[in-house]
Each structure stands twice: as C-alpha cells, then as structure tokens.
Amino acid sequence: MSDPREVRRTDFRVLRELPTRWADVDVYGHVNNVVHYSFFDTAVNGWLIEATGTDIRSLPAIGLVAETSCRYLGELQFPTTVTAGLALEHLGTSSVIYRLALFDDGDGPAAVGRFVHVYVDRSTRRPVRVPESIRTAVQQL
Amino acid sequence: MSDPREVRRTDFRVLRELPTRWADVDVYGHVNNVVHYSFFDTAVNGWLIEATGTDIRSLPAIGLVAETSCRYLGELQFPTTVTAGLALEHLGTSSVIYRLALFDDGDGPAAVGRFVHVYVDRSTRRPVRVPESIRTAVQQL
Amino acid sequence: MSDPREVRRTDFRVLRELPTRWADVDVYGHVNNVVHYSFFDTAVNGWLIEATGTDIRSLPAIGLVAETSCRYLGELQFPTTVTAGLALEHLGTSSVIYRLALFDDGDGPAAVGRFVHVYVDRSTRRPVRVPESIRTAVQQL
Amino acid sequence: MSDPREVRRTDFRVLRELPTRWADVDVYGHVNNVVHYSFFDTAVNGWLIEATGTDIRSLPAIGLVAETSCRYLGELQFPTTVTAGLALEHLGTSSVIYRLALFDDGDGPAAVGRFVHVYVDRSTRRPVRVPESIRTAVQQL
Image 1 (cartoon, rainbow over the protein chains, first blue to last red):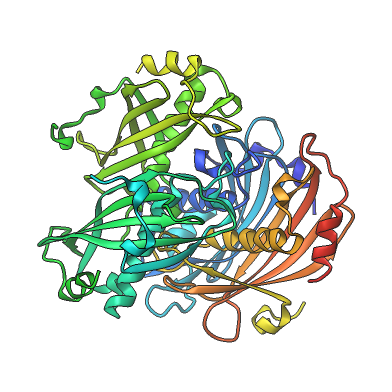
Image 2 (cartoon, rainbow over the protein chains, first blue to last red):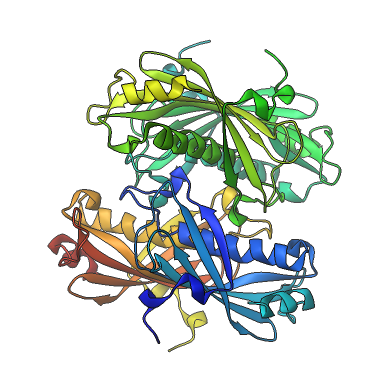
C-alpha cells in the first residue's frame, strides 16, 4: 500500500468543509481522536443526502456502519476548518466502502481513514442490496 | 433563592452514578461545560426508563427539552464517577421541571441545574398531556 | 423580559456559521439539546480568538464557564448550517456575560441562550480581572 | 485471523464498565459508531491512570493516538453498561498497541477494536521511549 502521507486533496472528487468545535479539543490541546470519526460520519452522510437529493434516513434500507479505521498523521486544532476528502473504495452488493482523508493546513493529510456502510432493512436489520439512489451517487465518486 | 453551594446529596430522592470519559475533558484539564448537560439528559431519561419500566422513546408522547440551565460551582475530572441528584421541581399539564445537581468528592455540588421537558405528540410535535406512566414516576421524586 | 421568539439576526453584531454533524442528532431525529451548548462554546471562544488575535488559552487568565442556559424554540436538523448570534449582556470586573441565539431557516431563533465566563488565574483558579485584550474585544459586541 | 465474533470476556485480563449516555444514541436508535472510540479511549486511559497510580497527562512523555479501528458486530443501546475488554497486542520501543472489545448482553462482542498509542515528548512531540511506569503496567495485560 502506498504511503498515506502522500495522499492529496486532488485524489478526491468530493471535498467537504468541517469546522472544529471548542469541545473537540482534549487535554493535549488538539482535536481528540474520537472526533475524526465524527468528521468521517458527517462527510459521508452529509454528501449522500445532498448527492441523492433524498433523506437517506427515511429509505427502507439504511446504512449501518460495519467497520471504520483512522491513521492520525498530524494534529488538528481549534479553530480551523478541516477539509474532508471522500472517495469510493468499493461498491458491493450490500456494502459501500469509502476512503477518507482530513486536511488542515499543508499539502499532506492530518488523517486518513476508511468507512464501511452495510445496508440493512430498517426493521429486520438484515442485509439488503444498496439502494439504487445510493448506488448512482457513489459511482460519481 | 437559597445558596446552590448548600445543596447536598440528601436533598435528592434519586441519585445516579455517571462516570466521566477521557474525551469529556477539554484544554483546561477539566470536564467541558457542555458535558454537564449530557449528565442531566442521561440522568433524567435513564431514570424515567427504569422508573416507568417503559421505553419512553416509543410512547405516543415524547418529552422534548424546552429549557435547561447549569451553574458550575467546581471542576469535574477524569477519571471520576459523578453522582447526579434528581428532584421534581414542578409537574404541569404538559411539562415536567427537574432540579439536578452533580456531585464529585466533597459535600457540596460541582454543579446545579434545571431541565424542562415538554411532552408533545410524536408526529405533530404539538404539546400534549404528560403520559400517565411518567406522571406516576415523577411523583415519586 | 421580551419574547425570545422575537429575537432576530439583526439583534447581533457578530454572527457565526456552525454546521451540524450527523452524530449531533438523537433518537428523536433532531439535534440533541446538549449540542446547543457546544455551539455557544464554539461561537464565544472562536470569536474571542479571532477578535483578540490571541490564543486565549495561553493567556495567564482563562475564562471558565460559570453559568449557561438555553431555551429551545425550534428543532435543528442535520444537515444544516446554524447561524449563532453573539452579543454582550454585561462586562464586569472578572466576568463577561454573553447573549446568544441560534438561527436555522426562518426569521425566529431555534434557541436563545446565555453564557457566563469568569476569568481566573490559570494556576490558582482564583478570579482575576478580565484581560485587557478580551475587554477591548467584547466592547465591540 | 480468527473470527472476531468468537472473542469472549475471558480473553481479557482487564474489563472496565462504561455506561452509555442518552446523547450517544443517533437517529437509528443505537449508539453512534463514533462513541465506540470514546469507550476505547476511556478504557485505555482510565486503566493506565489506575494501573500506574500516576496522572499520565503530567508525564514528560504523553501517548498520542496514531491509529484506531473498530469492527461493529452488534448494536449498543441506551441505557446499558458496556463492558470493555482490554489486552496488549504489542509493546514496542515508543508504541503500545491494545486490542479491545465491547460487550453488552450475550457472549459475543458488540464491537472489537485496536488502539495504538505512540509516546512523544510533551513539548517537541517527537517519539520517545514508552515511560517505565507504563511499560510495567501494560505488561500486566
């Protein structure tokens, strides 16, 4: 696998702006590691809502998070506006895998991550096919 | 009004244990002011679920928060387990007002607060009468 | 006191944009009541850092939160960008009291609040005079 | 690698109790994926503070998070008390890698994860040797 420090904004078709909050910062004076996942979550779902033109929360199939990961390469501060890059790693029958990166100042990323949605029936919570509106959207990535 | 520093654990019929989390602590090395409201929210709703024996989220009337306030009298740390005291200030037709306090070490409170639920119809979000199961529960406070 | 529903964006000299996050939304499908205080905290401290041109966290006197309150007048959603209005209610010897409001769509506020900073010595945590750089800044409000 | 669904409480020397909060739950009625990392963070740091008998935040070397990951195998609810299992995967010169699992009801885990601390000098933020007090503690895992 290539060096995550080489990831650039230009590697992503979709970039989203996410300002940090005062309470994101922990005792070490930087954005706490947990918050990066809130940026991932917000970037993916916010983009899906816009790109599909649909409130994805009311579809019969909902995307539950099956796996996430993050490598922290630099510190994020308050105040700043983080740029999240969003790319498609894989579109499966019932899952979508996203690659993400968070950029602050500088060319290299402050963090890179991975985010896996598995689509399930809202009521039974059993896996189902990724809805067409979401398939169409993620193929633009 | 009496001095909030004089509030004691014995002023509350219900006491709930709420441990702090690492990410609760902000750059000043204490639990961030926002987190106190998560303790209030958790104490009220957690107690209501236990005391009514009902998942209050699935009732036709749900309690939306109409007003909250907090006075911060001392700092909370990580790790520690906070004790939240819960009392009834007022039971109205469609609203319930709780008094809360958060205790750590020591006799006096680290914070005192107020939390107002207004019950609304789940769909229309128009005010309705506080459900009987909740009336019965809060009268024990 | 006047009706908080009559508060308008034009009542505030400072307005700040604060996007919601996916995880801000709770089981009732709206931004949880706790998050409003993170908006207040972020608006006040973010503005102070910009207006003073100083990292306020490294001053010898730091602003600890002594009291906060919020009235919830409407629901906030994800995704949306909230506008926070910030005004000075009172500048005392060691305290600053802010009035805040959160606006989404529509003219009226989704929430109005109050936020009290007391300045203390970073080490002793005893009250001290509000630093000059902060006095100068808040008088612009 | 073995099936994460086969992980059991008995695979961990250290188990920590972590209650969920009302605001942890998102629009899908379960604990949001971000919160699991707050459980990991709290379990690791809370245990380190107890096991070393030291406030690890005031050591000259601090543990910054370099990498985290989580696989979500079941849903967590409010209210419940999650049991976090903590084990040592690897102790390096400047890094510690933990394996974690979160258990609710049932034998199998609701989530399994990995958490990597890299120790750095508090001021320069350059990697340094894991402090002796922390080496001694993690070897008990």
